[in-house]
Image (cartoon, rainbow, N blue to C red):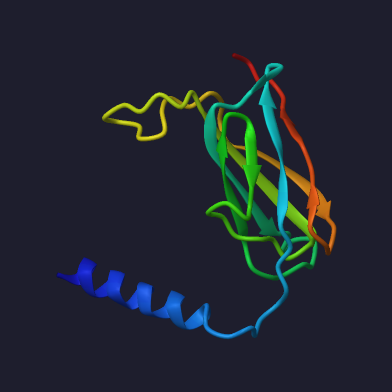
Length: 130
């Protein structure tokens, strides 16, 4: 019961937050994600404001499919400026214990400066001990 109440509260808060055009601007980003020279089959990429670098704003995200991502396609644009990009990649083969498939690598994170305009950027996830 508590879970239902929390879920309803979260839904209501997110709907209210999405009303109107107030809040910081968001910018769309599209690109490719590769690992070991191949497109990442599935996953998700997050664009978190770099709080340690003195930057605040909304988080952006996008799904990765066949090595490509676009915040316009079911994602959310980023705030621009200093951010931490976090990439999660899977083999894209759904399994009962892993909806998006088996992880190809541990979370990969890097600090970048994103432009305050719509743009494109590709990411290469380096191999780490596998």
